[in-house]
Length: 78
Image (cartoon, rainbow, N blue to C red; front, side, top):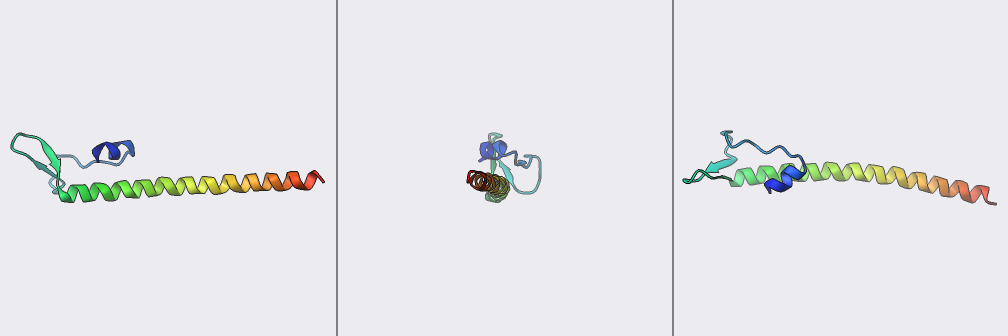
């Protein structure tokens, strides 16, 4: 999950934060708590949704241009 967040440039809460997102094991390793996992999932979903909305906008614009060009070609080829 951390790797996915990094790929999407989603900010990962630092281990030093006292928000309850991280918990330290006895051997010094840190892991995400349920709260941390939930928070990161929410942020990843939001970023994916934003990226998808951007793509949808561009696809609509490009489709409109292609249809307009097709209409012009059909009109002038008569």
